[in-house]
Amino acid sequence: MQQKRQQEDCCKQKEQSGVLTEWKKLDNLQKTQNTARREAYHEAMHLWKEESNLAKQEQRQVGWAKLKLGKLESQAPKPGPVQGKGDETSKGNGEVTGSEDEQSDENIDGMESDGESAEE
Image (cartoon, rainbow, N blue to C red; front, side, top):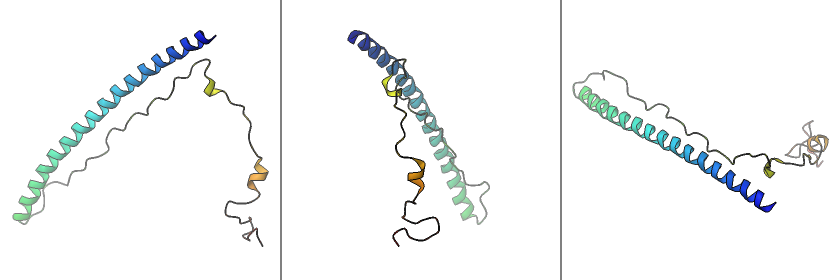
């Protein structure tokens, strides 16, 4: 019984390791794309500043609007533990503590629904 459980745990760890390495590859790709986008933005911003300074010297308006970096590619969510057939974390007793009536009798701040304090 113990050996079977250890084998299952070992397989889950290997599977989780593979999932995490794939996620790390995607995460690094996303970071490099965002870095390249930032570098291109900073180069274009440098050109805009030169144009802006030249326009100020010549007392005219800048020919094009100030650049915006825009939205970067967001990070993919980190994968959680792999769910297996015999996963103990998915089991729950399904009990609910307290009832809705007990919880809704009084508001959090001690005020009743008519606006008067419950202490009075």
